[in-house]
Image (cartoon, rainbow, N blue to C red):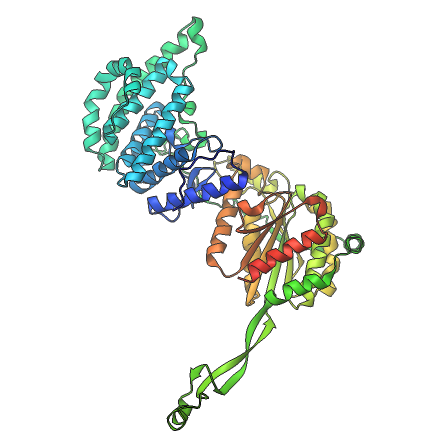
Length: 572
């Protein structure tokens, strides 16, 4: 395994951050023995969304933290996933927020105490040491409440993990530890002895949390009413102690039986308003023709030669096809009817039967276009790019489709309205009306449908972008072609964006679905996927990617870059 413990002397780039997170995600899966878990912005997730792991040391700042700290946090998450039953944990959580805080921390320590590998144990210790430094550097311990929480964390972890408190920390918490000893003392040994039994441990943890909650409340009240210079030292709020998203540690709803909210997997609130159209159905013929004329003029001005494009693609779009059966062949499968020859003429090698093969084009390529609002300035260059590429592929007898994805409305449209009428329940999933556009189908000829390319200049089509559902739709169409070789080329200028969905769920909801979809297609391995980013790096999502300069979209360099990308994914 690559060493993740070496520090970087320079800040990591976005690509390096993504690569590091992918490596840490692999560690997360391996240690937790769960193939479904992943990391998203260094937060734990599975197929159902973000996981509610709430302990203060699990979330180092990925931009500022050293690699050992990130590795230790990942190992801690893996131990939690491996050793904690989330349903049982939710059932055992108390209702009061201060009590849940303590039970969450103790359950994390219990899981870490069950780590067996020496390297993992070392990483966990390093991460906790880094968190202690961060806590002290933030000066949260300078209040009575801050010191109380710090002492509870140090003492309980030391007992559960059998890891002694360092001399400096021991001196620091000596007074607070003495003050808390009547509350903590009776519970420490039972915590240690029950760590292999989650339910028994949780019962002890709940009792301890209830005992400490009264003291925490009293300290909070005392510090709120304290006046003078000390008033400026505000008591640390629970979100600061956790330093994680509030929705992962949401208040328990009434009647929920003490269960934490768990983010659901990707879904749509309703698909009733989704539609699929051909470009000719939504753009008037006159607009198609005028747009096509503008694209043709720009293509002529760019003067991108077709011959090199065709030449470079020729070899990778062909597949071997069986032509006819061969008999009396010198290789292949042994022919039972020639066994006599094998005996009578042992020197004659013509005792095999096979089939001849010839190269034949059996390839399909789909271009999937992001028609979100930010793509409007790129419409003409995008049209030129497709004009050249599809013309070249058409001359090679490659089946091509041009598809686009947008929405019927801004800010959710009728879907969001229905959701609001239903009382705006939490995490509703996708909250907009999909609009999928067929600009050129695989069954139509390029000569008859090239005018449809002019529809790209109809700017009213460009609204919001929901990529993953469009990608799944495009792949289903591509697979129906049943070509020997196939690839989908996704052209976009960034991550998915839909305002209503982001507000009602979280900012990364659509992006997580896209990454999951691309990962699933990559594992399936039956087609190539090429991500093309306009002014952005698509390599953060797509395994094969090309980044294009928006100013040069449609010129020779951009065409050559996509041709090379197609050669890569089709020539696997």
